[in-house]
Image (cartoon, rainbow, N blue to C red):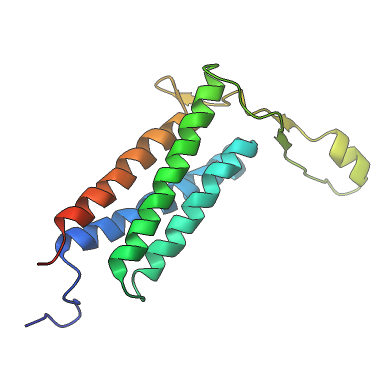
Length: 166
């Protein structure tokens, strides 16, 4: 007999996998925006690339709460988390000089009241993809995304494998 409020196909492992699939990318995105708007660590182009799969992972994890098959949506979220982690690993390698990165960079365009659009464009800071603006324990933000996302994405897949109903 199924418990009220708990669908029969959602085991404790699947519930934990879903919580990780939603929580980790949400926390990493929150951290990225806090770093950007709270501490002025504006993202480069590859930083943005890392955010997009996290947005997708959050969407997929939320869909797993309302659409079947839940395991499919959670798996897609885990794939998004791992994709962001792999991009982060590539980005970290560029920052550490292990390989070449992209040639495009991005800048933070902030137009102050009373300034022209041209002044805002010419005074915008150039954010380079090959320079890490911040490190913790010798690891850049991209490197931390690689580590955290890699562990979280793999953990979700392991939990889904352990949580199969028979």
